[in-house]
Every structure is written in structure tokens, then in C-alpha cells.
Length: 160
Image (cartoon, rainbow, N blue to C red; front, side):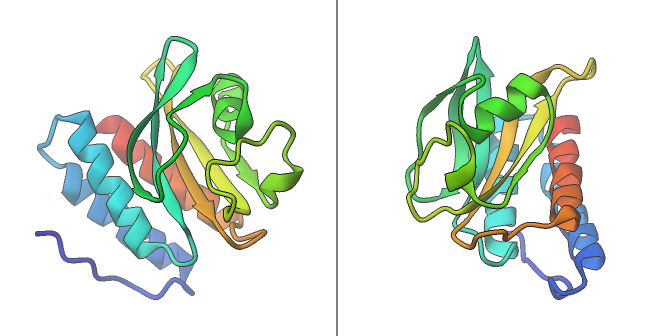
């Protein structure tokens, strides 16, 4: 079993470096995408304070389909271009949203969620094939350091 230890979240650089090292250890020598997504979602959910959902959506045609996650049950299908997740894929760029209620076309899977980060998962050519999605019940919960750290974790998953 994987034991989670690490620095205090107050030192975000050290926190995300440790989380990245733990994610690498979890996916090392494991080729199964679902198993790796499940472990990384659990790692993020239990390590990152003040969040209420962490998980993955995988692209199937022009729809994102729910993958492994931690948190309350979620929306199963999200069209590309809709909501924060669909926008991340359509624009092929990470989305850091301080107030999801102010985001045009936001899809409320959990009414308690107020802030969100979505990082596209890309193949070797840079084409999106899914997203890493993190929600918080706290408005303006995420800053640039969180985004950079979560982008690095997404890269660990992409390369696994």
C-alpha cells in the first residue's frame, strides 16, 4: 500500500515536488491507464487540501467520458466545448476558474463546487485525449502554483 507523506502545503514548491515524486512511484512499471488514473486521482484527493473532487475524463469522439475519480458522483458525459472540462479540450489549454458560477456554460455536477482547475491530457503530438479535473468548494481556491503543480502531475500521467 502506498503511504502518503510529505511537506506542508504552505510550501507549495516542495508540496508539488513531493506529490510528483509520489505520482511517479505509483505509475512506475504500470502500463494500465485506468489503474494509473485511479491512483493519481486518489493521491491528489487525499493530499491536496480544501478540494471536493479529483479525477479524470477521457475523450471518446467529441465527448469527455468520466474516468476514475475521488469525490461525489459526477457528470458522466461532457461535450467538447461545454463547461470547464469541455473548454479545456476545445481550447487545448488549462483552465483555472476562480468562480465556476461566473464561467459561461458551467456544468454543475456538484453544486458545492465553486472553483476548478482542468488540465488537458495530450498525446505526443499535443492533441488532447482527456483532462485532469480538480474542484473545490472554496471560491478562488487555486493559484498559479497549484496550476503549475497539477500540470506537472498531469504530465506524469500522460507519460505513464
